Length: 182
Image (cartoon, rainbow, N blue to C red):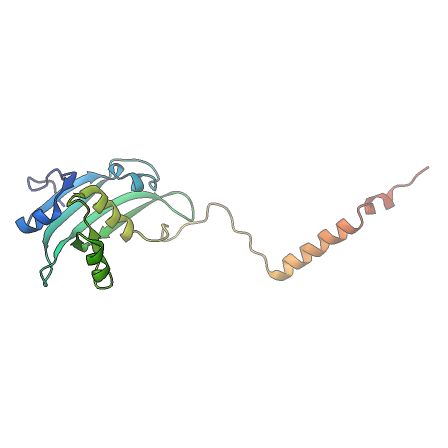
């Protein structure tokens, strides 16, 4: 997404059903640090931006929906080496909007849904949820070394070490046999 006049400040709270009727589209950028759940996962807070392009429209069957693309580049913590790992998340939401639990129950097996309560939608919550859903389960570099060296042992090594420990425990005075008393 380039910086141009079509990029706008995204609203905080919207009435999504009204926006669907108007066929509205939003394009904008939000700092990653504006999302509290994402901020907690960052390696360090920086000035990375989330690029958002959302369209309030209807499905082929006429149901109200939000679709678009959300792109986030973030410095996250690598689960393996615990160092910084730059990841890019691309979410392509196609979410049907419902206003009741009954509608949600009816559609949940067919499509992704978003329950709109009180006819309002906090846009940042929606965007953050879509990013979190698109994130990999484990964040890691393609190739990296673990933070601590792995100790590899076969079951025989463990059994042998266990026997040595048992022998030392069985005879705690074995060291005294070499001492001579005058």
